[in-house]
Length: 457
Image 1: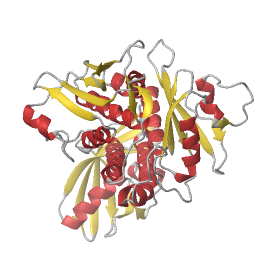
Image 2: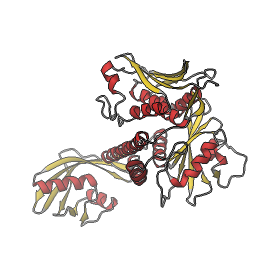
Image 3: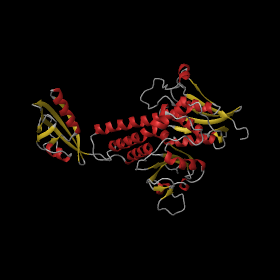
Image 4: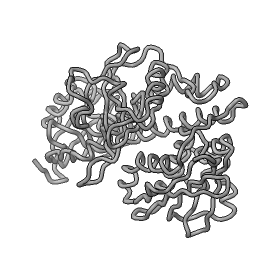
């Protein structure tokens, strides 16, 4: 029902502890359906906040209140007037409207975001569900990640056995997505999430595989990557990150559940609060990853292991991993043609890490509807990967600062830590290479990764 703004719909009385002592309908019914009692603590969060502030300040306060009642959204105007130890509450302009359910595509995006935050192992697959790379920070999964890294080119189901499936693998990815899997070395229940890299009307060009468990590990510590020497013990990477990442990931997952109203109806304001919590949690997780990488690359003993790679292949893989993010922003990525070749001697995982950072930055800072060009070439005894964008470009002074630690060139609110390019240059130099930039204001930027050429490639 709808009542004119000047009409009093209901009256109520609260005490000095913000308990509702008495209330007229329909406020009384809403109090009960929200889990409260009369007398009892005010059960509508926004109303509780308003009454508490008015009581403590001893000032009459008014505010529009939103609440959910089953499948209905309720909006009403409240006047809270301090009286005695509590408040006299007047309700006006009571309005009811049906809740609008969230679009299915949006809900799926939220599910994927939650899965990415709580995944304990991430792998990247080609269009045939064959392994490209795998990564984990959990010691329990270290043997599995090592085996998958050694098994590049094999189907992921050779390492993660789908439960209760006897058909020849791989099945269609939709039949495997979300299904339980088992593997040696863990008694926890596990499931996989397969995220396709896909364009409408086409088959997936690759997949992101997430390994998840709803049961927290009893003892999960960060591990050194298999291909690199073990660095000295670091405070963040080996002590803080493993302790903090799991609870922060759970906070993010729960906040996303609240924000998307998967746990039940919620006012828009509180859904926005939950979204801010989830966003802050994701920033913390990214910062922990960057700080752990920073410890590794700044260690005196840090070095890389040279692999025989082709920068063209690695560039296409990096672009494929970030394809969904680019399409969400309306940005196209041009990758090296299959015939292009730049054979190199450099560590595959570190080159992939650098290119993911460069392409990710290009997507983040480029205007919607532009393109990012990724190409490779050979220059003397160097193999080069070049990432060019159509962003705002950088001045000479900014180019001199862009590789400094924690440097963000005055940008705020973009989620970056200011460590990505610093770490990427350290990685390039550890591989006897270099990372440089060519740019001008208004003309975009070209980041050039150089690593030693494979003379026999």
